[in-house]
Amino acid sequence: MYTGFLHLHSYLAYLVIIGITISFLYALFGALSNREFTAKDQKFGLFGLIPTHIQLLAGLVLYFVSPLGVSNFGSHTMGDATSRLYALEHPLVGLIAVILITVGYSRAKKISFARNRYRSIYVFYGIGLLLILSRIPWAAWLS
Image (cartoon, rainbow, N blue to C red; front, top):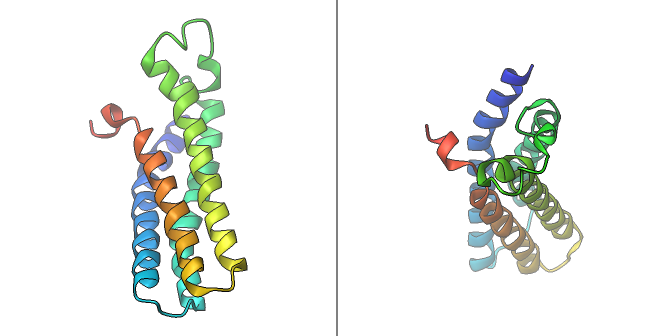
């Protein structure tokens, strides 16, 4: 089970990054072109939202079954950068990024002015993307 969720979480990360980037760029170009915010634009926001939520669910399961997750907490965790990354930083920053992306999408649905709807998506998705990219375990991911 652990190996399956590890692979799912690792490969789904590509889809998450691509989805958030597409949503971010689409909203940015929408705001710059002053076009009306339509149902199609709202669906483009889902390209980043849905894979991110699936990634969160896979990550939560992985966090509790992985030897690097919650079972790794101890007196050595904060002193070792790799242990701290897997046990604390990666899950916490990922959760904050998912919350920001969800808030940005939810706000965009409630705002009436089109440019502000686009802005809500590109600002929150952009911050979420930066947070996700900052806490990816690059040494493990690229090897």
